[in-house]
Image (cartoon, rainbow, N blue to C red; front, side):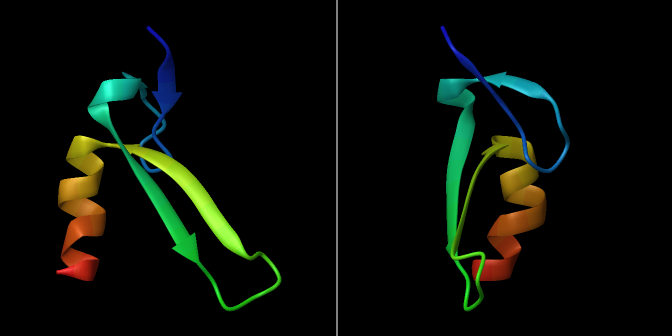
Length: 50
């Protein structure tokens, strides 16, 4: 099974234990495309969009 690197904590996690995060910015960067572990998503990112 493939693994992904969490963009927040840097840990390696199985693909099915990650959350795909796609953020459309209003800049030249365009879209930011990351995978984060579920713990980092729940603690760091979910509160931002709740």
